[in-house]
Length: 94
Image (tube, rainbow, N blue to C red; front, top):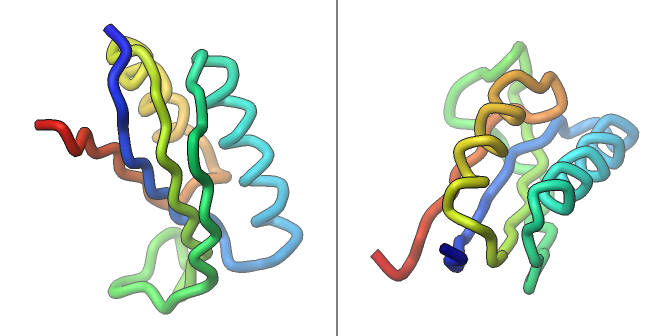
């Protein structure tokens, strides 16, 4: 079943690492069959607590349509990835 999701990801604040990580995130979403309807760069922000020895993170917000079964697979890939500091999928319809 296809559903709409809001997806926020925190990437490393270093410009080079951020571009590489964003390309990785977009590739994984595309591989899962997600249709990105909106992508917004929210910029670098100070984190509330240190994540992977990082005090700052680059936030990127997405709105996408994807099969609900794919969310579990995508989440697993992002959990294991060193490119992604944190991420959150939210279904605004629930």
